[in-house]
Length: 392
Image (tube, rainbow, N blue to C red; front, side, top):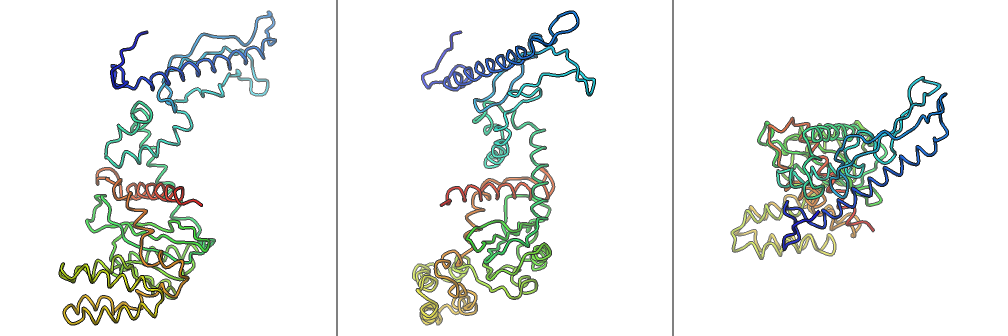
């Protein structure tokens, strides 16, 4: 059969000629494999005959054609049919031929079933799920309404299991906390996702807990921390977060022994907001001299210098630094190789940077639990990508 090919390598139907060739090759190889499997099965049982000498296992034409989604996109398959008249002596039922290559009701290869959640997450970035499966699989069949419902149900179950897992075997040295506002239209406009990310003694970062609540609500944070303590979490040595969080009051209540470290990125932004634009560049360099100092003693001197230079004209801005001196410099009491990680909440910000872009769920799309489960899978995907890039 002749095919008209455009100058850009696509056919009249818009598909790539290369993809069409690969798909046709996959269809032929699959058909040949199924034929070989059936022929081998029948040949092995050729000696099985009834009382009249007729063979009990024979070919019986083909099953109805069906489309199967594979890595080579969607291909149409006509699987050979086997008439097996043998009877199982134990159960008394007819024996059935079952293909090891293509299960009777298979519509997707196992690998495609694994990649579907990723395609669904990919679709979240644009809010349109059709281009994602079309780009990878050649059709939108992979993300049918039933498939999406199954995925979200599974994600809810995964998130529920994550929320109930035992934390007694995890010893988190440091934790980063923040309240993340996403593009999820929940019942309350001020609702946020409360996030805790911890690091083990071996340096492994992982998501510790995640729940919906209010970013500035100390009671919401206390509820999250109490739940972690109930499941066996021990008090971390240091917690890093934004100074505006209600988290700190909750931390003193649940884990009073944990030290506090304010995020320098958030603190710098707060100080800049209290200064005129003309003074911001120089002031920002002065702040960098504080948290980039070679030790705590030099950092204390840099704070004194900052207060002397800006205290007369901008006392409110200087007060933001001097009032939180101990919380801003706590990271200097820990190993120097950890300072760059302990100065900011970057482990949360970097993980949620892509999540913020990819999450676009309206209120009508489902319950708060479903939305949170979706965010959980997005975070899990982002962390896996981060680990893959930063693997030793």
